[in-house]
Amino acid sequence: MTPALAAVRATVGRYYGDRLRRHGATPLGVDWRCLPTQQLRFARLLQVVGSWEGVSLNDLGCGYGALLDFLAERHDLARIDYCGTDLSAAMIRRARRRWPGRGFAVGAVPGRVADYGLASGIFHVRLDHPVPLWEAWIRETLGGLHATSRLGFAVNFILAPTDGGTGREGLYRTRPEPWIAHCEQVLGARATLAEGDGLGEFTLLVRRQPAAD
Image 1 (cartoon, one colour):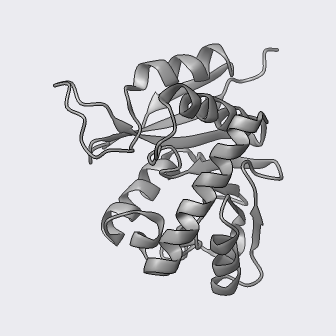
Image 2 (cartoon, rainbow, N blue to C red):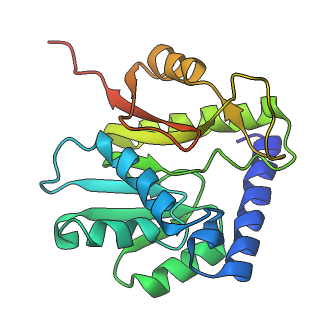
């Protein structure tokens, strides 16, 4: 990791640590407006999962462990091998208190290989980082997700408006096409859009190509 990307990592970690101190283990604590939209994003990301039988998941940008709350309402957690990773040490401490016995670690990429990797909203808040630097951070993170995902991974982005509007300052907005191309041409994976996207966002489902015979 270059010094510039290491600085991005440190700044983002501090930002979310501050959100947690101000708002606690709530959607606002990870910069989401409300629980329903937070959970809608989880549902879209989880479309990447092909089978829940003995599945293992890496949750990158796990925050305080909200994905586990969502999964507990819909699946048998005892049958899911989960590990959460976050840039914010404060988030990881809170997640460990909320979900003792589950694996959590501070880091920029998952520390193990799992069937699937998920990342909800980690590219949204650019802060004051230049767009080229932020996109370098995204490319590095996508590479890390691909390397640690046996079957595939899913990420989401804020959709760039077609009318040229800018919206809230400090957010990263983009179109799907360049990131689909990156996943397919650089990572050698197959990338599709999740069903039911809205909220001014899109979700990429990135699956490994079957090995050639």
